[in-house]
Length: 353
Image (cartoon, rainbow, N blue to C red; front, top):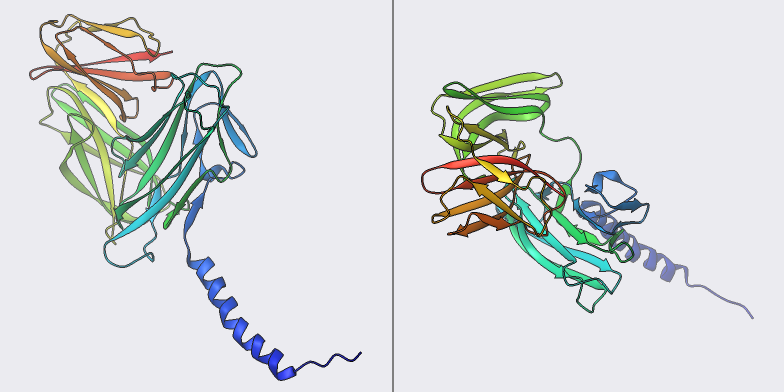
């Protein structure tokens, strides 16, 4: 049996398929996205837990996974903002306790992490899927963190390769400014703020910002950046009118094209005289109460727990009480406890076990 082919027909198919293939290729190249890959350390950071080439597992511990800092893809959409869609999957062994919790938090522009979702181990489903989208400005940056808390030596929380996917974003590569040694320290009648940069790319200027709560910041002053530099440079600023009590300082870096990023947050106390204030017990376990003295138990105080880098983990209101219970979602580590009312503010370091 002879088989005859219509050459012109084949040529027509080739001509039709080539632009389609080219279109698909170009689309894949231009699309920007993130996928968690435990073989690629640029796609995640963990505080503890077990990481193997395909997954991260947490047993009998409280651990956190951080994504990289993301920047919206400037080619995604039109205008000054875009929609970022994402999917986060969290697996569990299926028989955890109700007090074994998983938390998903979001952070925008270096601010406070805010809880987006919470799951408990008593839920029947073994896989929790959080799919959503959010509108962000093209000059924003953001990241996610997933905190897993488990009191079992046999059961587990688990996140696998590909369980976190985020679309319309860029990440990794050279940061506009690589900060070194950001410091804020009290010195007699002022606060010294200083920092170094290991490199600068397209850096227009720095803004020194201050806050009383670690969330809402005010601009104090600006300093010109170096534009582009590959050598270590030093900068300093003196706050000659400091706030009496606890303050938070950070450095905002702005590019020539308007994009910006933040340094880590530094916490400092300006107090000419020591108060004798104390917190106990210290160390304290999650789920246990801490006492604070010598405050008046009839007054209302705000009690906030911050990481050493100045990120707020939780906040409580002590109404007529001199104690609060430490949230079980807080991982083990060293923290600042800041207790304040309308007239005074105190800061102490505590160890959470």
